Image 1 (tube, rainbow, N blue to C red):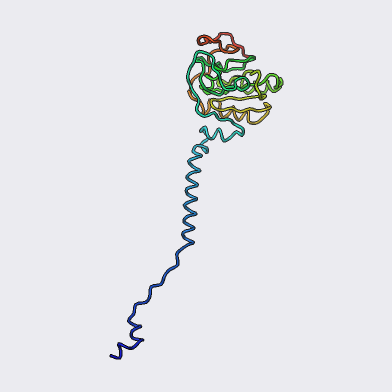
Image 2: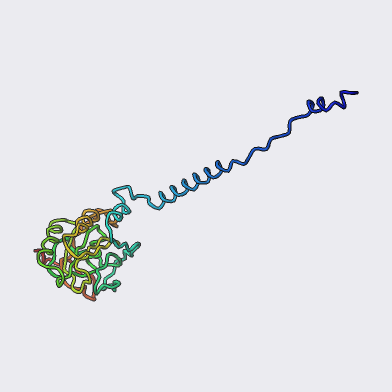
Length: 227
């Protein structure tokens, strides 16, 4: 009976009390940071799909500072003049257009927006300049970049608020001088580039000068005005 009252014996028969382990705060914080980083990487990758692909539109857009992107534009063919936004001082870079494109070449006079926009749909770059703001030397520099390329056209644009404006389908860049490095970069990236809505379509059609007549579709003119 003495053993029953022996405290040492009783202590030996007891199970050790469980030890409470501290909550792994450091591990939890580390895991949360890792999850947040992975989510950030996934979001960034989703938002920048194509930027690393040199054949993609996003890559081309990322290479030119000051570029204006118009987004989705109508490709409807119309037979009458189109009221493009701000067209009195800004060339259109897409939208409804005449069914006849403007032939890609250098023009000495203004061409109809509706024909030029059709050319943009085929992958052309349309170089425009304000004849009151651009000197002869800059005009010659622009002409050298455009002349002879089957997907580039150039024409004066009286009233243009900038000195020079370049248009591809949905893309537009304005600069002050022909020597601006972005001019050649724009031409290199967007001439028959990833923005093209109808790849393989020729940039040939009318060579007529002046605004579109408010009648039926203008037929291609045999009179070239190329310098």
